[in-house]
Length: 456
Image 1 (cartoon, rainbow, N blue to C red):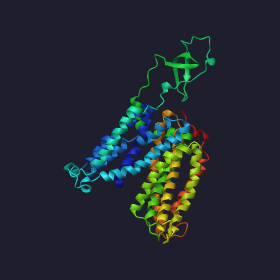
Image 2: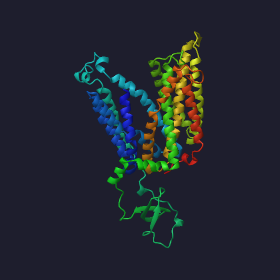
Image 3: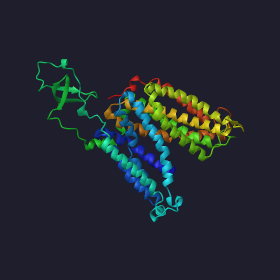
Image 4: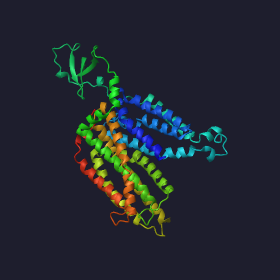
């Protein structure tokens, strides 16, 4: 299972930048439709796989042709104004959290139907006995088909084409001695691209009409080849201080979130003697599922009410302060020993379980705040015709930094196994996270305030 997950993530990391650059050239919508199509095809391939090699191939192809995560964040930024970016991303992450809960639940329920429902004729069919995992994959393909149709009929193209970016001038700035019908101006759009357009003056605006000799923009084969060999483009992006700082923030976040994802389950299942909570895997699954549902409700009904109060940079900074305190305090939960008493007719171990559940949900909410704020400054660091490449780049960098996140597990195992004293005992991994949050907080003080606003 771990190998299959690595195959998917590795393939996605290797292709994210390419798809992002291509979306800046031909539009977001075609690339999203390609991603939906890949899920439809390769999930069917996965469901009917009979060998491990075919399963790995399906996962690799599914990952390589999966530009959806980066492009969804790009499109969400482009369909709303600055005031609603935070709210829009909160809805996106809320539904993603719900998907992480519903996906495994539905998949587990549909898997191996012949064993789960032996008395149901359809479940006991020869097809489902031969391919016990085909139903969850067919269900996934069905959902991907619905998404494909929704994109076709309801999603507008959000890429700002160069031909559509013209300067707006007041009527008083036009020389009245010139013939308005024949006036030709060299216009410079907000990205610095110069175009020549014939114009008609109407109600103080330039009514753009491209000159007949101007050819429409086409995608050249050389451009696509450059996209496939992206190191030069990556370097060019990172030479911009705004983009470089935003990419660093995202990479740093990816590492710390992966670090915590490795440490926390180990702390849950460790024995009381070693400083853990002595939970079972079933306990952990329940806690994560409830936290996911809680995050969905929070992002849908609570966070949108307060999202307009803070700028993205301020949201990141306040969240990092809260996370630094949280990581330094949460391991002390293992010191609490539930006693045999009742409070409001609820036993002590139930109250303890609720406290751990609350801490899990709080961390998920704070991590969500950091994720939203950082993704906003990533989108705000570049113009529309660069956002696909920028989101593809940070997806690639994030995957690389997530790959070193398992150092958290190594740190926790070392601290527990070596029987060190405080703070190098089981607290050590959490204290490292707290220090990392403080370091990122100090770095965020140097972020330019212009990252709070979108570059159009």
